[in-house]
Length: 303
Image (cartoon, helix red, strand yellow):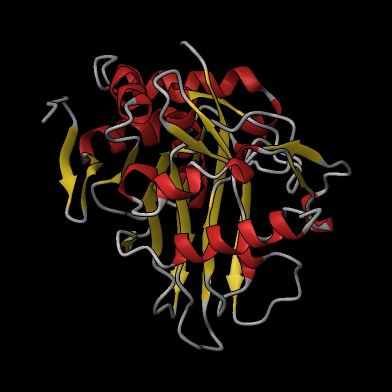
């Protein structure tokens, strides 16, 4: 296991593919002071400032964290980590968590513009009542396994989801599945329908006024499967495509190798978007339920 000063790194109890990274108090305390140089407006309006806060974090780990995070995400055997403060204090508020999430992602790559929020990140609540057009905010509906960025022109190499806060929550656990652990992968990957171009649209809340075409399955340089799929947005053009999507959906949700993860407040899960799928279990009914999440997704770059 890698040893980096200021970090506690362990294998996740649910899977050796996922690394748990706890940022120790001494680093969080120093970051709290360093981050005070920039308010949230500066982070949002000045893209170069985002790299500055990322460098603060990397410097405090002797510039080892950036390489380690990239190694994890690009490695097919892992491709996922959970990261967050060792413990929360009164100083680790929502603004601090936005800045910390910004720092982490800018050690990995360059975030995409999030059309839903108009920023490089999006914050959203899941509550008891919802009138949106997205499964993401439907508290009592299963959020099926999927990848992000299926309906946009930009590549989406990775994604981060940070739990900002939650109250009166039972259920709602994160669900993850690595393609190499999916028992139906070879069968679906070998079906030529999955290599056809599908049309992908999106609901109004996404603020994307175009559609894209791409296959569900491609492969990497080693011939291993990559996937780009979400159940809500494909627009099948014939019976063959429609039935293939149903078979795919059933095979994903029916997998016995899904990982069920309960994330603590302040922690973020970061995953390679090409071979990890993610979802969420339904919440238990509660009129006072509230969870706030932060999402950042983007491309790999070399820093």
